Image (cartoon, rainbow, N blue to C red; front, side, top):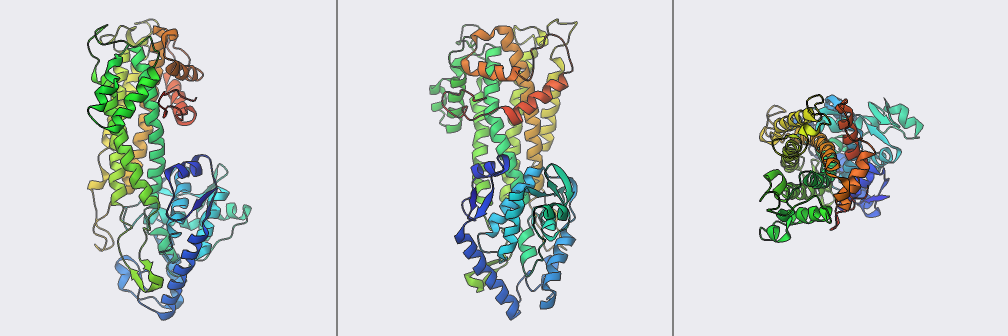
Length: 507
């Protein structure tokens, strides 16, 4: 059980909530803050004070005063009118993450919602009821208005949800779990949708998958080094310590661990003096990606515990401020940066694939073919990898450099952070496919070289890979192999022990 406090949620805990379906609850202290904040809102309504979103309209309508008897209608109208997302839904895990993040933000006690509202979010997560939320339609300020409106609809008994493997009517799923719809009152609709939880949730899933992929890329690259009789000297600790980047030093250390005891690596001068950059510079390139991952992790964990709605309530309601914490610029930059960094893992992987299959660059059979000429071998797998890295370059164009004014120019600068997070996720998916192709080629190459000479760690990787992708004895429909290898990386390739010094994968 993960206890939400509004202040301490980590990516490690999110990993458990998303992938292990860990249940959640709220801390006692957070409930006290929620109750105090709610009393402040009720007092504002009672005194008929002019406060944005509580006694006024929204956006350009902030100057329109609302009659106290229309407070509930105002909140319902807000949710229904803003639920105008389009396109395919976010992955179900993103919807689950959005529920968690929205609850955690409200538990900070600056938003003025009732306990029952947050309770419903917690109940949805614990019952596995995940709203269907269209991916497109957010500008990333004032937060993720359209996606979060779709997230809220099921709380009201409207919209659709993912439930027990199916997409179904929200009210139907709620009835099965004994959960009843709620009616939103003052401030609650605005508090639920004015935030960055769509881009942040998408960012959390993207980061978690990217981190796993970064570790996997090192194990695959190590196997490629063996397939090409790469020079181990380039990974010597002294080389990396003198440059000083901790991430570069760590990658080199893990590569040395993965290749320990290998008889397929060489020393400089034995076959050639130095390797191509795609082999020799693995610590420098992959290490730079790890620098970016560390940056993104920091920004996500701040945002996961941030109060991002508007207005925010301080000092028991004595101070209510309309600010701009809903603006997604920090996450927009982080997601663009993440996409670029992961795309680079694909770029360098594709170059290693070329070195594995090109007979002008190695002494292996052309295209790793069993019968070169009669059989094409893995020739076209490199084409697919090249296509994917080219697509990534297009997706990596930063979304955050764009802005389009909205709400009659009241909201005149926006982040496009949700677009950036979606593109970053697509890049991660494409990169996984490129690495799947490298894994297929590397496994073929090391088997041609002789598995008895492999390092214990890479041999373990090979053994697990061969349970899914058999040795290529003749041409076949390789699309199936790529899909199988992709699924292996996504669901079956544990990276727990690659993190350790020795680098032995637990598979």
